[in-house]
Length: 359
Image (cartoon, rainbow, N blue to C red):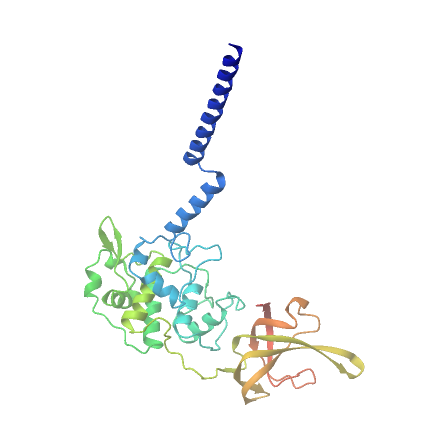
């Protein structure tokens, strides 16, 4: 009798353990661990993202149309460092200048300076090129306003300028297609033909609101919209393919003159030399990544120097920090004039320089 009771108790405990094990397995299957849940969430997020952009989905209209792929593969648009594309972010004037500069093959060109542009920034070369070619113009007060958002009609005008002055195609419109869109009367008079041309070429088709297409000319241009506009302009209007650039003359060396604002890149070398009783003197020599021609003012005349591979960054001793010396840098400066003294170490000098490391 006692033996039977003990056996029954053992069986009950074994059954309880088995039941607990089954329940635990069931709960593990029904409720994954935190690590498993994180993996599932990551997989879900990856399925919802597109082309590595966390805020873009495969069903978004600018993805379905193929415009995002075209603009990104062509190098016109890039994502942010945090993995976003920012499809509904406004586009700034500095960004548009940079995009069109890329479309043109990133040519070099000197131009007058705008007081509110930091030419050591990513858009420095682009703004010099865009303004010198009247693709993106400055304002009457001498400013460029690189961080100001661009309206849709302004973007149409910039694309029209690019089409005509860089690609060499005439821009004109009778604006009949434009006038069939709602809100066409609100287009500024200076932009009317440019917007009309953009509508004719299907670069702009209107923003749909409650099933109705509106021009919305004063609305800010968004990154997803500019992806479409650039793709249509480059692929359909100009007939180019991914990787093609417009208006770029390969092998043509840029020429700069004294007084030009320039953005140059290269290796900045620190040089010390003895100068009589004054003792050691410091100079800064910029070895250019890309050689250039310089029409350099020497007194009241100009001397043309071709295929220049080094220039002097003419700054006072100790004026440049160690962090930019003996490394690759970007220099935004003004091409100077001959100073006619022992302090000039190369044929060409740069004045009033802003120097930033790029490596």
